[in-house]
Picture 1 (cartoon, rainbow, N blue to C red):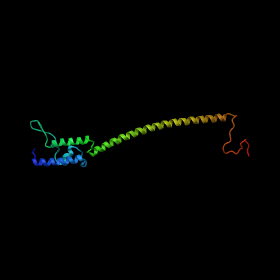
Picture 2: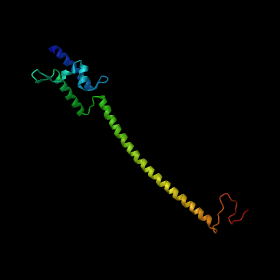
Picture 3: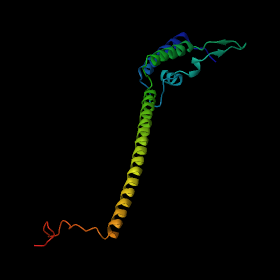
Picture 4: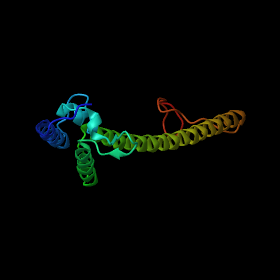
Amino acid sequence: MARISDETRARNEQAIRAAMDRLLRGDLPPGGKTDLKTLAAEAGVTRTGFYPKKNRDGTTRPGPYQHLAEEFERRLAVLRDAGDIVDPREGQIARLKAENANLRERVVRRDNRIAELVEFQTLALSRLVAQHAEITRLRKQAAATTNVRRLPGPGSRTAAGGTSN
């Protein structure tokens, strides 16, 4: 692989730093993330320059832009630790997780309320059935007894003494 000139390396580093600043401000391209792949694409350099290289004898040496990749990761970590979310998708994920937790809590509360209402309904229905059975029993008992006299209904025209006008 051919080596790049100092001038090209300096230009590339300027482009990487400019792209780094944009990404860390949250100015992401469509489909981009705050990662090295997007950084390389935005700066117009290959991603391989951010990683260590192997010499022919098997030893490793830093990639030409590895120090910038480390700086990018450090700055990103500082922003995340400070609570600043650079990637809008991370913010959206955090918001959706919070909303999901809230909705789950609401579902649990509603399930508990429904269980209470079903229990109340069952109790109310059993009481109504018991009252109906008692009324039916009392009506049968009253009909079977001969010494019970029926009172006139609200629509009858009898005097208070039981005689008609």
